[in-house]
Length: 250
Length: 125
Image 1 (cartoon, rainbow over the protein chains, first blue to last red):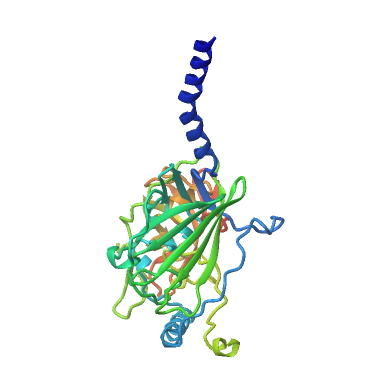
Image 2: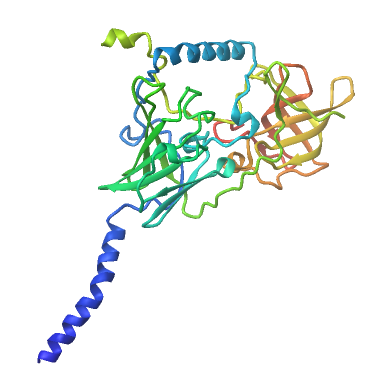
């Protein structure tokens, strides 16, 4: 009798770690899969579409030159000209702009320790580490993707990014410093609708944080990501800084 | 506090959906019809191109470079890497370059089999 009880206990004890693991990995929603930009539109549930963004409020000393630059761009557009920007040169977008490039999908690969996001446009890759703390900004090499760490807040994945270099356009070309800090909250608002709420803070250039949301809808299950290598860029910037298209001369 | 901020609110920010470039270089109010033979179909990034020799009203053959979206975008509306090949006879309706060069942005393509395709989702024929 005693031996039977012991055997039963042994089985329970052996099984426990497996059960605990299964529970912890199913506690969180699984974002794995390919997601397309969701624009809502006519007849769509307004709760599923991205809510409006907050106003952009820069510090006065940064607002003036930024507004002036925007005015020059708008004037050029009226003349039918586009001024140069990084994407015309096929440079990657980086974090967070890579999350919303035209209608290109993004693929999430989620494991307990890491969420990897692959953008179809320009084949950009970013990683959010879930098993380690963030580093001090001054210890992160400035780049396009910086360093992202994340944790779960209930059903929401909260990502924290620092280390975005100042030449990377994070939002409509706003000026930012090396102190920029990006917080994202990823959450399923419906089984097949994912929101990425993005907050950009910069104590040097911004008076207030800027928050906007990108909404995605799950692509069909068999969708295969398309490669994107920018090897035939026929847009170029002329001597006046205007974007032109190369035509074949024959 | 509010008045302090008033002058600084620049734009009611919207979700930025970025694209490789704007379409300001093309005259989107004008359309040109080109009928001719494809000399090259470039299924490439950041854009797909159709190179075409097309006859004008006087019978002179001119060469045109026509820009489309990217492969990824076009695949969402029926295009494939093999949709066109060198020598195919096609009719293209395009928005021409504003600078007068022989280039443009595709509005609608009529393929050798009679099918018509646009320039990606939202730009259907």
